[in-house]
Image: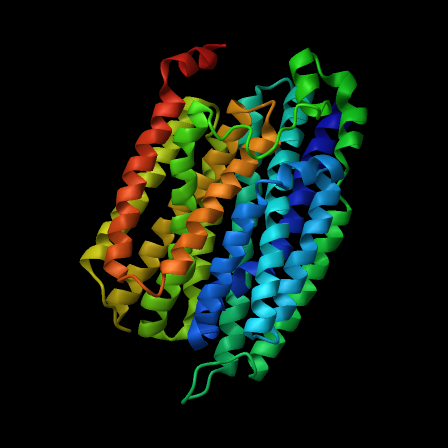
Length: 429
């Protein structure tokens, strides 16, 4: 049992490190996209196209994951991130748009495979350690998202250092300045390390073969080792719980687009310059990482998911109200402290959504894991894509008020799903 317990944790740690290094590069670039590629809105449009492609591609992503297996699907999906980063070295409409389309396609596969792999590993860990699946799923999601979020701490600090080096007194850094070239060399190296870790993942059939004797119930065996139940991305679309959860999926995409695009471009850059985007986002990411670890530790079932998610929603609602009330910022220390504090609060809120929604899907849909995570990426990506498309056509205050309204409605819908009477019975089991 000890060997299998360690094997499940190894799966978690290798997966987490792979995504850490891959998204250290991609996440930092994404934060800069709308600020560096400003000509004709190339940066914002590229991200909008990327997430639109991801939305559409998520419909078929479960089939790809089923056919390739989670490990091979992850390895294949990383090709899109390589191409996207290289395209940024030669930014134009002819390089960025095709790269964004392909990255969206592979990104949909990556995230469905990640959610499936992590859930299976958590369930096998629960069986090996004789703990509840809800607790294992919550803990595994918390640890994964904590490591994942910390990638932006390192990535953005690297960005801050190199962009400060590249900055001159008269112009902001561009894709042709020495600091930017060095930055992308570092990012390509990080991508290489992340790809190596992905190669070290165990395939799911190996997980099933080595740990199946430990599983005590037929239901757990069927969840971990039998993938014949995998359905397409359409399979859960009209299911009642999923229809309500779609609202929170959309909000997750919208709130991330806000912090990646509107916050960095319309709030941080005008006040402090593009070179400080990395520093502020590093603070946000550190809060996200710590919040993910804490949220995952205390996630033990549906009631805890409801409480933790509600706390995160309230936190982000307060931030949006402050942003709506105060629209302009200066380089003074009070505004600087306020923006850092708001970044921390937003990161904590994002951590609760990422950890708890992933855990919730693993609990509610044990036999439809691929399809459930496909729905998450479809609607989360749709929200992000819409946000980037309207980014340059809508007033910042209007976007903030709209985001607050959607947050309130989506949180209420989530609580209906989590706390409905028939779900309460399962908590006592």
